[in-house]
Length: 243
Image (cartoon, rainbow, N blue to C red; front, top):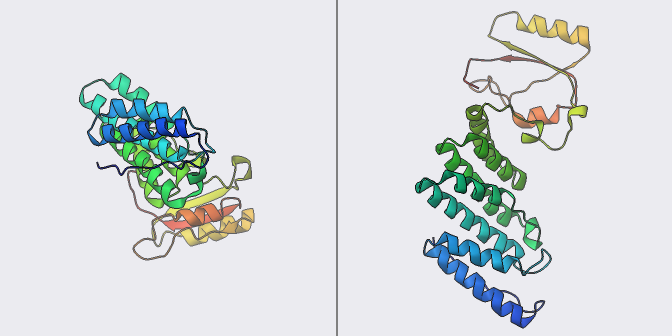
């Protein structure tokens, strides 16, 4: 993995501190490129201790430190030292973007992708609970639809139930409506049952698929989010699956 040389802005930092920072960043980048992740962690941690979130390059150092933690984790797993590897995973999970790049969409995507990759790696190593934590971290940074595939797989493997916050942060448990879902097959009098329930409850009829046809058995997450605060009745043709 080739790391480009990264240059700090001298306008807001003392030149002596800047020189030390630049040296540590360069040494850390070189160490990471050579596969010496332990040394990279040391250099990046030292450089980070000299910065505050409002100063230039803070988030870049956080990203570099995350890459170093992940590289160390891979090495420790390969060496059979799982206990120490998991400590580095927890250190990675504690990292946060707090500086000027925290609002940069592309940078956030790159940062989230590292956690997504770590989640997949942990899943392959049967560390399902930590895999869930990492993919949740990725989603909290960048709410990309692809992340939910890994989330569902990790939750299923870990035996954990999903949380409301896994799918939306725009509504609380207290704001959730009540939902009746009729899982049915064609020509099973399900339309009659739905109409009866709508009349009895006064709930709203909700069509929860993106489109009928080949995908009519699949729930559409954006639709579920949009109507989550309402009381609804849904009639949907479904087929069995592991989920």
